[in-house]
Length: 258
Image (cartoon, rainbow, N blue to C red; front, top):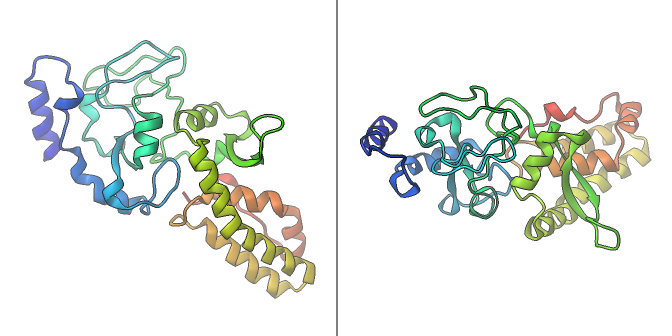
């Protein structure tokens, strides 16, 4: 209902809508917040609903689609389309992604009112579609360059182009996020790794199974930093060690809940 009413207003303008013309989409904020486990769709931080933004995967008013094309105006006709709406924290949405929507070279941008994807080839992961971001983004404990302190940094998994553009566009390695991830690792993830390693040392199968199940709880979709937990635990305790001890191991990236 809101979409129909707001689109009619914009079409009556007789010009390309600006940011100030596009409104009314925020009414779905609370529903998106709950559907996404109260987490930002990009950084996986749990935040209060009053500090949310209703984010547009395809920017609504202006769009920077480099390197694929020189398009400048946004996807205003998708401003109220469910498939284009996400819940994001202001840092990821306003300070980082903003109006960036990089397209692959050779992409043909959508025409007004055209439904996606058309002949567009986005270089950004959409947290709401069927592609699991964990398949494309990996967290590695490393320094950005030699001599710098190590942090849990987001990198492209197996050289993924989607992973590379997504982690840079979403700002997944800001100083603030590096600190928050390091803190979560120290206070939460490391304890689970230590307990599982102790159980493996004991060689008691029931104890290993119990601690492995506890570790898997960090991979529930409602938990913060699920992707970080997955990579940190898997790098600390090889899958082969778990398979030898209890006959099962870590899920594949595509099976990690997000």
